[in-house]
Length: 242
Image (cartoon, rainbow, N blue to C red; front, side):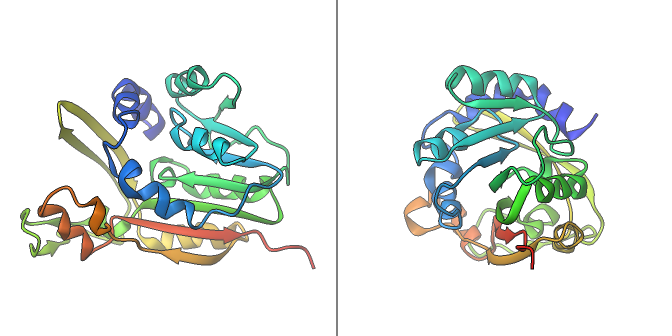
């Protein structure tokens, strides 16, 4: 089963999870941390792996002329239903239904680690960006997907028992407040993402490893993630032609 198939299988759970206001890190702090990297609205923004569309809708509200793309038919249908005025397309990130140099901004928020053919998706993003166009991305930080805290205490040791440098599939099932969601993803070392960006001709201009701000802590155990990053964020650019 591909990662896209796994997300389609859990689409109903994800829609419920994603649309519960204030429920997860997106609402509490991560969206706002990410938006600090995002340029103002321009000619065309593409949201790759838009899912049920919560960030797509927010970007539209900020003035972005946006196209959302996702490989899950159920999530595409949910995004269209939530806002019929948005341009939401069913397609794989490795074959974007867009013309060359047709966008000045691409968004890949918490999606590249959920895409089987990540390097091909990055090359497709580079193809659809105009010279000088930018990609803003966020992923599960690879140190997070490689290891675990041994206990819930704020000072608990963090241990990597496996092989950080080798890619592997993983599934993380989370139960909270009566909801359950299984996240299917691919661990890759940081070097795999930088290699994909390099091969696509994209240059990193900003990198962030944000922690959980004090106002977003929901338990003493969550202080563990003020010592290590949950997420990795980047802004990269397709260089302008000489």
